[in-house]
Every structure is written in structure tokens, then in C-alpha cells.
Image (cartoon, rainbow, N blue to C red; front, side, top):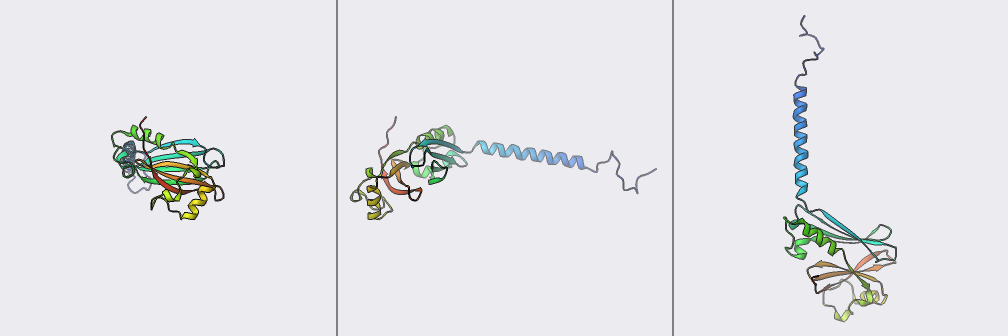
Length: 191
């Protein structure tokens, strides 16, 4: 008897379903393999260190790099207060700020850079230069606000924002955050 007119499929006839499933499985495996190989070439690194900046306990600095390769990476500098809230963040293409010291072939240099970059200088705002010593553009604050922040002797954190350049921020306890105070040129030393 023939099943030709029957609506019931025979068990030995899958109408190409298994062949199609095998093709889909091979395609999915190829996609996973290609996405894994793309991620190996990226320059995504993070380094975190505890600091004492705010009056809220153990603060931390987290620095990150991310990009298709280390010569094309963006850097992020983030300060998190003792309660886990971000209080300051700064980002820039690293090659633009620090020159072409990063290469696509040497990601270990990026890890070393991030470890060093995460070490800020912690001081007090009274150590900031007087208004008369600033050059135009060194601060975004007006003279009275700048003088008030200096006189209040608030915590100040300075981090590198370029080759031989630091950005200094102050902790404002009333606002519960950090604000930009001034930028300065610094002499870098090799250890």
C-alpha cells in the first residue's frame, strides 16, 4: 500500500529538516568562533585602587581602557565614593592625550599604564596656586569661587590628563561630589 495520499509522514523521511539543522548549527558555531577571535584583539582593561578622597569612607579610583586595539583606545578615569556613587569621571582618546606610546601589538603596556594612572596625588585645596598665578583657561571657575574653594581647605585629587599634565578636582561635601578646580603642567619622573 502506498502512503502517497496519506497526511502522516513516514519516520524515515524527514523532508530535509536534519540537513537544515546541521547547516544552522555549523553557521552558529562559525559565528561564535569569529566573535571570540575579534574580542582577543581588543584593548579592554580595568584597574581599581582604593584611595582616601571624600569623607564617606573608602573611595576608589577605577581606570579603564577600551577600544578595537590599544593604539585606538579610549581611557576613562572614574572616582567612586565610599557609598558606591560616582563623583567624578573623565574620558579621552588615550593616544590624543598621551601620544603614541600605545601600540596594538603590546597590550601589556596598557595594563602597566593603567596601574600607574590610577595613582592620583591627594592634597588639600590650600595647596592649589593662588588666582594670580593661574594663566587664562587653567580653571573654569571665577575668581571669587576659586578663592572660596582654596580657603575652605577641601580635599583635592590630581590625576594625569595628558603627558606632563594633570587635572585637579576638589571634594565638595555639601554637594556630595567632585568639581573641576584647575589643570596644571607637571614634571614627570621615571622610576
